Image 1 (tube, rainbow, N blue to C red):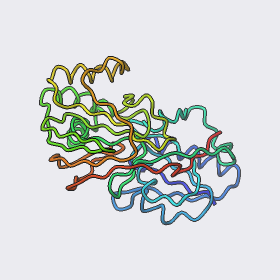
Image 2 (image 1 turned 180 degrees about the horizontal axis):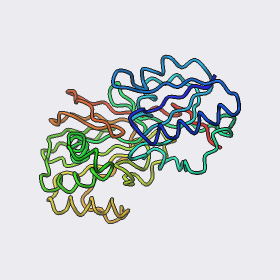
Image 3 (image 1 turned 90 degrees about the vertical axis):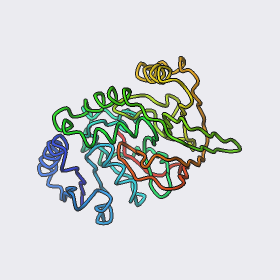
Length: 284
């Protein structure tokens, strides 16, 4: 039995589902489809998966839901979201994917996940500016018209009303206290934010968190640094703390953070770590 979890809110995911169903029908292969809804997420459906062949169709949010109720069996991932940062990091080209070959593939790659308190993430975690952009974009009435371009618009608007937060950040034997945190970015994979390469040295296969901290700088310096990220000019960053560690503790007055493009309500103290070789993806 082949089981397919699909993000039903994504038109492109449903189009891909139809193609897969046609292929499976031609081959007389049995399958069942589990479509997400407001009442049932991919995380919920993972409790219903009983077979050895699972296909997940959706974006970064869908794969995040799967990983947060993952049972250890390898699966096929087809990226059909708005950002597809995980697929970009993994160098998955959906245009060259052969589902039949993937289902029968013996090539399996293991990937690390990040953990913040009890929630796992595949790509990245953010406090500050990036989380504010997600919050503004999610509540924007223009999101359904602009698609992923809404993040560019909200990014520009976010610069105009740039917020700063209080934070205490601890790792190993080090500590940072600041009342002007503009961005705390913690990555497992290189990409997030719809294709921004925040952590060029991240591989998704190590047991390290790649941490970037922008604090105590002028707004112009922050804008300059963010433009460096957009242009992939990481070597030109100014007054930015770059850290690799396997554990991080954060307290902040920001009421939310983002993981894999989804907002999560903050708690008093955030404990970040990573789990090496947590989930398994099939490759051709």
